[in-house]
Length: 228
Image (cartoon, rainbow, N blue to C red; front, top):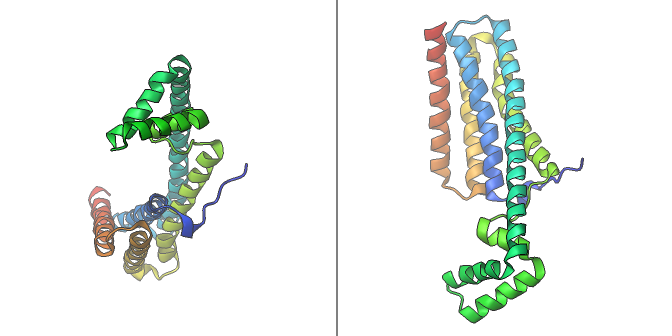
């Protein structure tokens, strides 16, 4: 199976937001798990095993959920295409009238709207209807579904690896400080990249990520202390 691999520099803002969100999920999830284990006073070796498993299982879960979503999208698109194809076969004039009305509602004069609708109908009538009526620009193929799912799982795993390494590679008596520091630094970095590539406010994006991330891992610590 050949995966389309979009270049980072050419990625759309929506793609960047998705990647960064998956990375941040990995950072927050594993860092939160690690502090929860600290709060529960779990032994060192057990903590290492649990957070490592958490990182791998989390990545697999993200991959599986994304793959299910994209295949569901593919099935919905196929059903939509069948319905629209039937309408075009049964009443092409009515479908063309919908195109004309769509353009006219956006300020195009009737003659121009009709001319554009005629050209679209003569070229790719189905594609025009799907784009204008439903906003369907690109159909989900199996390659796209698998590529996006693998990408999501890898992004989560990359984020999760940071707190795992912070825990395993630092002295046990200071690993909490290192984990929090690595999580905060990582979230700041990813949020900065997100704001620059995703065209959002830098300070607000960083602040949101830090508030959500640090609040989550702090709550995890107290839950571990409370429940175990």
